[in-house]
Every structure is written in C-alpha cells, then in structure tokens.
Image (cartoon, rainbow, N blue to C red; front, side, top):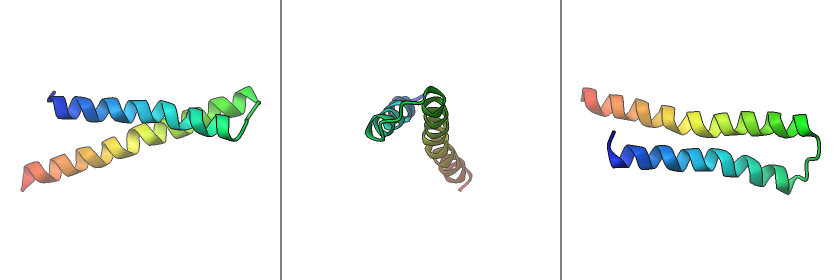
Length: 64
C-alpha cells in the first residue's frame, strides 16, 4: 500500500467518526439508539462512498 492510499484511508476514517459526532452534538440528540443509528449510517456512508469512488477511478485508470 502506498503512502498516498494509506493517507486517503486514514482521512476518510477520521471523517467517518468526526462528522457523525459533530452532527449528533449539533442536533443535541439524547436518545442512545438514535445516536447509534445516525452514527452507524453516516459513518458507513462517509467511509464507503469515497473509497468506492476512488477504487473505481483507480481501476479505470489502470485499464486505460
């Protein structure tokens, strides 16, 4: 794994944790299960969508 790829993965991982935490605190959600659901859905989406897009771009670039 190259440093560039590692750095991209690390940044997306940090964003997948920070963005749901900031949103939950901003909306002042007190229900535990609602926090868990929001954190899980947003964290998963933030983590997988950009990585999927980067992987598809990398595969297209490799086939050209």
